[in-house]
Length: 342
Image 1 (tube, one colour):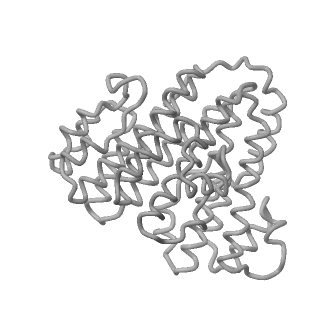
Image 2 (cartoon, one colour):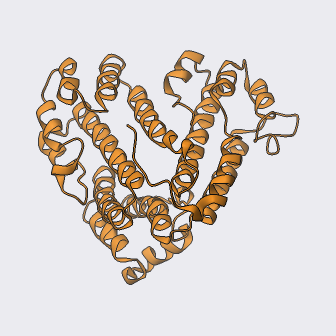
C-alpha cells in the first residue's frame, strides 16, 4: 500500500526537520528484540535507560507497573503536544485529534449505562479536554458540542449495550472523518482513513464471525465512509459473502487486495488458537507500512501525522513487553503480539 501525496508544502520544512530528529529516537527492531529477550524486569529497565526513556527510568531500581504507566502517559502527552504544535492546518489537526473526543464520548455513554466511574479512562488529547467533554455531557448541554460530536452522542445514547454504543459512535466518527478528509483533499490522509476503515471492518467481521451476532448483525455493524460504499477498497459484499464460508475459504474473497494476508493469517490463527492477537498485530503492521512511506518526504504534514501514530505504536509495544514480563509470558508469545516498529 503505497500512497501518493503532494510533497510540495514547504510550510512544513521546519516541522519535518523536527520530526526527523524525533524519529531517530524511536526504538528500532533490534532494541525491541533486546527488550523481549531480557531475562527479567531489571534487565528490561537497564536496556531502556540507554534510550530516550533513560531520563524517566534513570534511577537504578525497578519501577512499579503504575510508574511505568505514568511514564508511558508522559511520553504520549509529549507526542500529542508535538503534533498540535507542528500541525499548521486546523482542519487536519481537528480531524486527527477528534479520535480522542469520540473515544471520550464512548467512555461517558457506557459509564452512564453501567453506572460505573469511568473518569480514569478519559483522554486529555482531543479537541476538547476530558474534563470539558465530561462537563458538557453531564450537564446535558448538547449545544456545547460541535455538530459532528452531537450526532455521535445522540447515536450512542440510542443503545444500552457497550458493543452497540461503540459501533454507533464509531459510525459517526467515520462519517465525520470521511467528510473532513474530502474537504482537506490530501491523498495521504484520504488513503490513511480508508485503510483504518478497512481494517476496522476486517476486525468487526472476525469478531462477529467468532461470536454469535449473525449475518444481520454484521450488516448493521460494517462501517461506511463519506464517499459511499462503492468507493470502499473492501466492498461490504465481500464480507457478507465470506461470512458463511468455511474458515479456510475466507481469504479467497479478498484475493488480490492489500489485505489478503491479514485475513488469511489472522483468520487461521483465530481458528487454531481462539485468539485475536495475530489479527491485531497484522492490522497494526498494515498501518505502520502505510505510515513508513512518509520517511522519504521532505515537506508536508504527512510526517507529522505519521510520527504521532508511530509513537503510539511504540508505547503499545512497550506496554505489551512490560505486561509480558510481569505475567511471565514466554518470549515467543510476546513476539506474536508485538507490531512492527516504525
